[in-house]
Image 1 (spheres, rainbow, N blue to C red):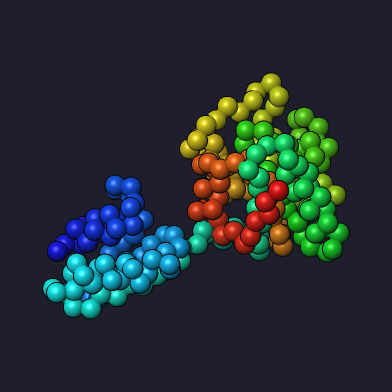
Image 2: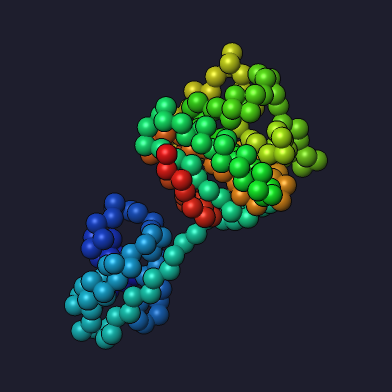
Length: 217
């Protein structure tokens, strides 16, 4: 039994899409399977399944679970997502008020507007159209500071006359580029104003950043 065959067997058991790169198989015995998602509830069942399939040739089969986390964001201690299942429920308003409350309690707060399709942070913080972030010497964005709160939004990079029309991976790619190229200054809590619903942007942030928690409005 080759590593590829074992990987295919595990993928079929977990009902993963064909070609999904969600795990790797080591050369050691017992076989080690690393999953990129929480699978603790299936650990015993998976071990039993593999034991039945390969136990006669390999002996005891061991399953080792490893939780994968996104990368830490430089200059940020904790990341809190503010999300909602639909638009128009006050998510951005909640984000702004939560940011001001945390700042009032002595925390250094940043707000990232992840709603690529309809950024509202500039409006929430009364920033006029045309407000632009300054750049560091290495061409990173310096967040726009409003009343002591650091803010960053795609709304600072576009205008009403040049709207951003992005879909799927293009939108999430633009957001990730903005995240990676923003120089947050020693932020205790970064609030991320998410777009409504679920989609590529939500998945990208969950996979690429080390999220501490979430507020659902």
